[in-house]
Length: 424
Image (cartoon, rainbow, N blue to C red; front, side):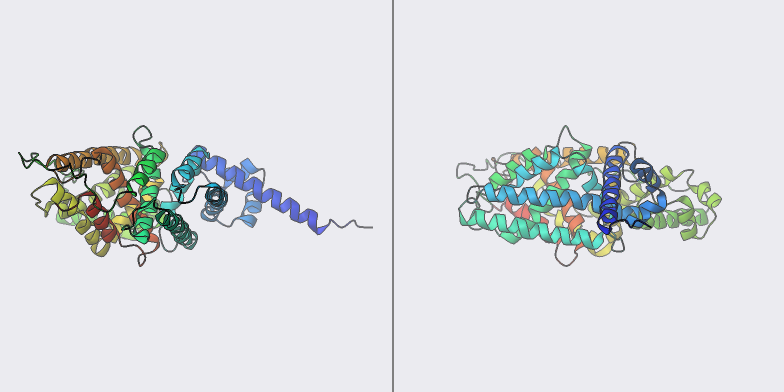
């Protein structure tokens, strides 16, 4: 007589195998990075066959999404627990950020998925879009309660503050991966939340600008110099422009790791050997893509000739609006690559590490000059404002990629700067 295996046992074994795969994927994504981990690596670590793994997860993208979904489910449970235990009007964001920082792999995996899934065709794009919408709803509830209990000033717009706070939080988490010694997410959130108690554009009545000598010359914009032009024939220069443009488009859509030189050559319509004649390696092409992005941004910024540091800072939303309307591809490739390059071994990691450090230095100096001029109130710290502005801008761009109708990057930056640099 044939003994039938109970359905429940098969179900239990399948569930155990699925969990083993998720655990192996989590550990490998954390230790090796998402792009450097293959499905075969995960299958071997989970002691299942490659086809067996595909029976549970048809793609690496969906597996990553499930790994992060597990973390997010735990995160939401902790958030609900913190909210239930909190005093009336208490802000719980910094406590939640502290818990995230202690959860092994959470920040690294979240950073990977934020950029990876930003392309509309990605399997996890809808999941991440809903995640952002859910976070905004939950955060708005906390802020509404805090405003009702007087923890948040009456004139602050909860909807706008929610968008900006969740965006800044996202940006801080990414910055902390590149500059862990300079960016403390919990400390930044605590300091930011303390400012909500102050009315919009608040100044200490005793903080009266001296009206003395202007702060001095503005620092130069910190863009990477554009590579020298191709000294060869015009057809060669045009071909290089086309290669960079197609590489930028593919990197934005599929990421650097999953885009091959063959993919780029096919998109350009040339052989791989022809492509290598212009760019000797994939890393060299990546450098050209990043330099092209910086060059395009620098050309737009050079048009602006502000009279003061505060005027330059107040002009930033114009550049954000220009990028969103005329050059969304620059935002897309930046979002994907800045998240993908978090592992120290990625060829673009040093670029982003240096760029973030330079950006913090540049904006810290601008805010310092604005404070000397009397435009930045004395209770605001230039270094803190610099880090928060960079984090906010990046976070808004990520959110915009997931919901271009719900998030207006330029408008949110303008509202932030009106609060930080109030008119005198």
